Structures are given as structure tokens and as C-alpha cells.
Amino acid sequence: MFTTGQWIFAGTFLVAFIITMIYVYRKDLALHKKYYKGSYWILVGFLAFIGILFFIKYFVKDNS
Image (cartoon, rainbow, N blue to C red; front, side, top):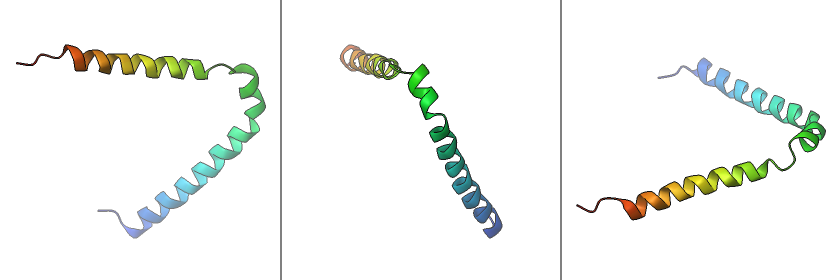
């Protein structure tokens, strides 16, 4: 399906992308802590909302 060259390119691209993302994240870590503190509550609220939807779907489904 894929040639050896394509697999090599994909692997090197993935490694370079991950290294770059780690570098950029660490570089901006101070800004993230300053401007995005408390953003975990949004994630908690979103996951709670999804959980409530699954709860409603499970208990209100039609049993016919």
C-alpha cells in the first residue's frame, strides 16, 4: 500500500513534528499559565455535559 520511502518520510515527519510541538509548547508555557489558568474547568464541564447526554440516552431509550 505504501512504499518504503513513504513510510520513512512519514516517520521522520512525525518525529520532527512532535519535537517541534514540544519545543513550542515549552517556549510558551509561561504565557499559557498566565492567560489560560482555570481553563480545565471548561474541559470538566464539557465532559460532564457529554456524560449527562449518555446518561439520558441510556435511561430514556425506547425498549421496544
